[in-house]
Length: 317
Image (cartoon, helix red, strand yellow):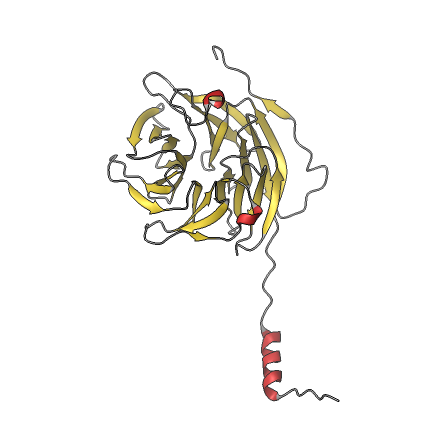
């Protein structure tokens, strides 16, 4: 017969374990359909300006000729965001002979200026001055893709070169930041920088000083081709999987992945943290889907897709 001993040390350890408070369960997020707006021309990225009550959508408009063509066909749309989401202008800023846009992709906003990635250069649009446009060139750039800001600087990912640039507004001496191969979406949250890789289908934390190598989340098995990334106020990561046809939520501790929405070709997502609205540009089907994110499980009726709103074709197009 075997005897077990339970000494004072074991009792003390047990008491200490019982005294440790349990970690609060991390909230699970759900996506409730709000709007589906159709009629875009290969929408690639959505940027939300909550304070202004608007959102901007970049349109590549070169599907038949590839997505990195210098052809002067791209444009930016503007949505009105409030009690509902409505189209304000399909071609809010359009390509012109004076200021041609090419395969526009990522967008970001800083100090009243809207920045857009334009293959090997950045276009800066002055929002409050009638849409004045200037060009910032990035030497050695190959495929400029997503854009982000930390509130002081503007950053752009170069998917073709596998690096991120911190932009120098003089147009010279842009600062390189270590990034994974085929880096795509980038974002900032509480001073930290995050990115996703298209080919490696992984999520990373980057060092905006450029000194340290990217740190992988170790979640590549969950995805196929990652495109966009945003971070919610509770630290939950939102990522779009273009070929996986889904948008997923990653827990703040980077251990759990929950599918949020399943839909075709989600590209560079936008997030309105004030209204908790997720904007998903559907690249291959020319629409933008909008969802309200909530921790309360929605009813079947709430999950029904809203009526699609078709953008009327403008005259002469």
